[in-house]
Length: 336
Image (cartoon, rainbow, N blue to C red; front, side, top):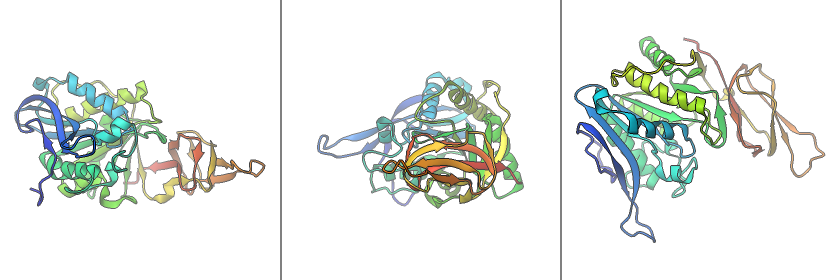
């Protein structure tokens, strides 16, 4: 048990069988509501003994594919199909989801940069603390559905932290194949260290997998099919769902993202002209994008270049950029 109990409280009994829906109550006292609380939707579907799975979306509020897919799953799942328990948090950073923004409008908090959280902090820190201290310890596995949100779009992908052993690596890559996205990649840590849900799951000692399903501030039919079918295939593979899932549309290409040189950033502020498309194979030094200056349009644009070879799996969407904005990122073939 955590040293300090979270202030969030569920309206539903997370240990009871059957399908339950309700809210996590996050106390929030403001001018318009002195004794108010923020309602964060949550569902629990339990049926006897079996795996304990946490499904999350809306970690970033402008990533919509997972929110739609998990809402539909809540409506469609019959407890008789379930073995064990599935807890569903479809809009984890609910204030951000309601605003349609990556971060919370209440405290500018980025939930996936807020773990392990703070039981007495702002709303986002409190949500992170509840997930890490109360929800993750109840589970054996967590699937966190992300996409590119408003600023990025991806080749639909699954991802996870590179495991420490060959056996764990084999389990992780097999589950990526089961999801059925075109790309599955492993990462060797990153600049955000221990502040992500991936790190939180590692601290608690449970398996974790995430996705990056398209994005661009919209929901596409193809990405939604991958999300909905992939979730069901994962649940079935883990023994939590008895109903046969739909077959995958894609054969997953296993890849890796192993350092900051996989990312390409804007060298100046201006208007971004992409010079490559998603899925392109590039070499180190390839021109990635031209940044056209607003204020002196007679000047030649600055050219952003890739630092290494790889496959373009992610591209920026908005045309206006500032120095330091991510334009692309690459992946390379998985080295075991």
